[in-house]
Length: 364
Image 1 (cartoon, one colour):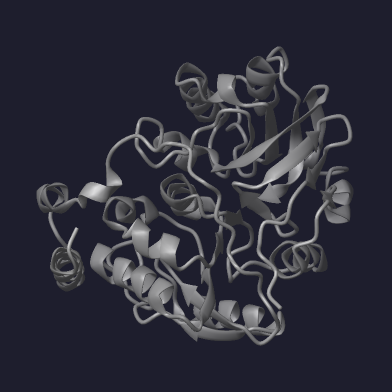
Image 2 (cartoon, rainbow, N blue to C red):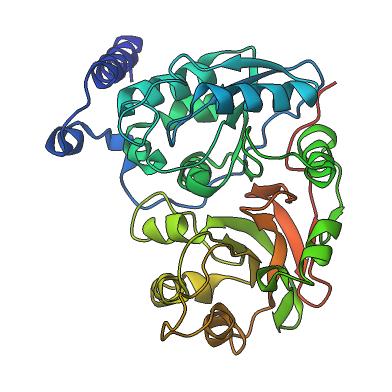
C-alpha cells in the first residue's frame, strides 16, 4: 500500500467522523456508513498492555454512555484529582441527545481525540448509562492499537471494554467510573492494578460486603461449584455482554474466567440472558464463572418466578466449572479492578481472584 493510498484512507475516515459529529444520523445512514474494519469475527490477538499510571499523569474524563450533568462531572473530576492525577474533560462531555451523552459523532470524536493525544495516559468514563454500543462499528481500532492507554469503567462501558480487547488485544479495565464512591477498598485496588501493576495480586471480599451480607441477601456469598481454574479475564455487565453475542465485538471466551454482574434485572430476565450465553457456547467455553453482586433485581410482592438464587443454581451448580456468587464487583461501592485480557486464577472455595501477571507495563 502506497503512502498516497494510506493518506487517502485516513482522510476518508476523518471526513466520516466529521460528518458523524455534525449530524444525529438516521439508522439507515449508520448502516451505510459503517467502517469496514469493524466487521468479521474477531480472532484471538496478541495481548497489548497499556503503560501504568503515575501520580501527576493526565487522565481524561470522557463519557461515551449516558448524559452527565455538571454536578456528576465535577464529582468525577474531584475523585480523580484526589487519586493524584491531573484531569482533563473531553470536549463533548456535557453534550446530550436524549438519554445519551451527545450524538454518536460527538462521542466518537472525543474517543479518537483522546487516543490521539500523546499526553493523555488514561481514558476514565464519567458514568455508565446506555448507548455505548452505538459507537462500536465506527471506532478506529487501528488508532487505539497504535496508542495503547488505560480505558476504565463498568456497566454500559462493558461493550467498549470488550470491543477494544476483541479488536486490538489491548487490556481494558472493569472498575469504578469517575463518579463512583471510591472507598478505601476501591482505591487500594486502583493503585495495585493501574499504578503498581504488581503480580501476583490477590483480590478478596471487601469487608463492607461481609457486614452488609448480614442484612442484605444479595450480598451473601455462595460457592456454586467448587474448585479453581486459570484463564483470561473476560466479562462485565450481563445484559450488555449478552447483547454482543453474534457480533464481532465479543472476545473469544475459550478458557476464560468469565465474570458477570447485573443491576435492575428480574430473575427471569437474568435466566434468559444466561440461557443465551449457554446456547451460544459462551458458558461452555469458560473455565470458571465469577458472579458479582446483583442488585435491585428483587421480585415484586406476589410475583410468580424463580428467585435469583434458584436461577443461578440452575445454570452453575451442575456446570463442571468453578463458580461463586457475591464477589466484590458490580454496581456497588467497594469493588475490584478487573483487567479484561489478563491471566488470573480464580478459587471458588476461597472466593478469591489472583492476577498472575501485571495488566500494565511499568514505566521507568
